[in-house]
Image 1 (cartoon, rainbow, N blue to C red):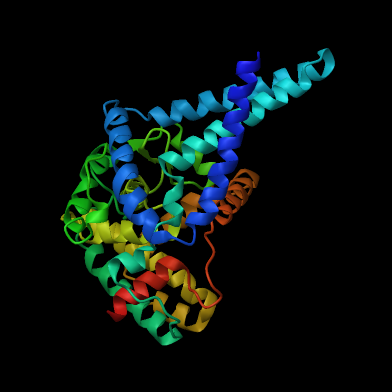
Image 2: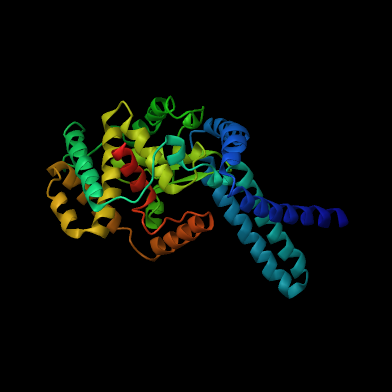
Length: 356
């Protein structure tokens, strides 16, 4: 009994130490980058990803359900203990359970939130940008999207479509990383392929297009979304798999992986997703300029964006709002906050690249 209590106490104490250590590392990104992200954690991520990559399905999807069921059982036991005695012991078990999950999360991936920001790695200068610069960026992305759109396939409804769907898309996603890892070795390495999520259609109600699970090292993709989003989402989750935890940086890395990809569907996916983000920023800044630029969309781009809007409209509701709140709180807890002069980190990175 004493040994069990000692072990439980040790796990809880270790979790508190990790919390303290995490706060210290926030002010030492160079140390995290050198000794964690690009050394021991990179090896850990690759080994985990290699092992789970053997399976054609998402191991993480089953693991998540197992962990949720386990937590529910622990909570039910806690309620029973309230009536029959042993409440404090069971409460301690819950704290230990959560402590172990936290410790594993941080050791397997979580400290990557403290690594060098990608703009420093890429040599890009983030600065306050004018509305004119944002306008020019959007105009450039519209031209690129229009040009690429006429070279990709579409279905009978005139919407961009990829023959073979996700089965064709996911194995090809690595090609973009093979191209950009020559310039950014931090993105190199051998990892398992992105995995389709079995409950993708249900996942749409949360508004989530993909998820990276550190416990298995898998990049998981919602395959029910429009095809051009599947390409980008796969590249986005693969950025997390390579140790880039911040969402907006993963978006920009996905853009790089897609636009440098040898296949046109990925190039178009990267361009139109960058366009959506940039135009959203412009709409929040200058609606007149926004409306003026939307008139430049090609017929194909308009159809794709309308289809995407209508697709997500079907899933709007309370579940999505709750999921967004949970995700936002999670991101804020890991320090993902942008300054008041920011258009959003991805757009800031696109602007920095545009200027360069």
